[in-house]
Image (cartoon, rainbow, N blue to C red; front, side, top):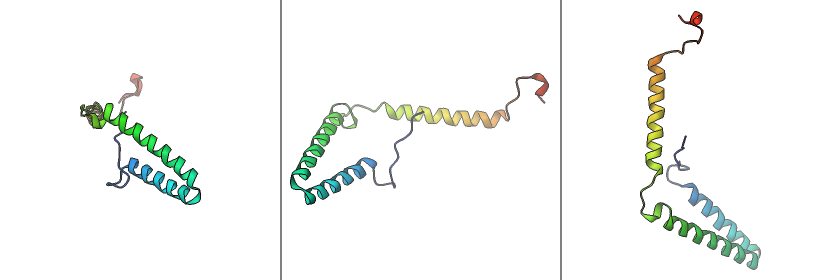
Length: 101
């Protein structure tokens, strides 16, 4: 069953948290060794550019309606229907007729 993407504390998305940690780590590397820090900065920039390309080409920034939202809504509706059916049906009856009330 699909799980909705949740925010860390209501306002902070996990992608921004990971980005912030990567930038802080890069700043520490720059402070420690300039060449190592520049190499890490280039790596972070390449990853960011690839992410932007994928997001623009295929993802949420492409303008194509999301397939995930209706799937999440349908899954949520099915779960609600299952809970409702469980409440209405009561306890399950055994397979053996002698065990039934």
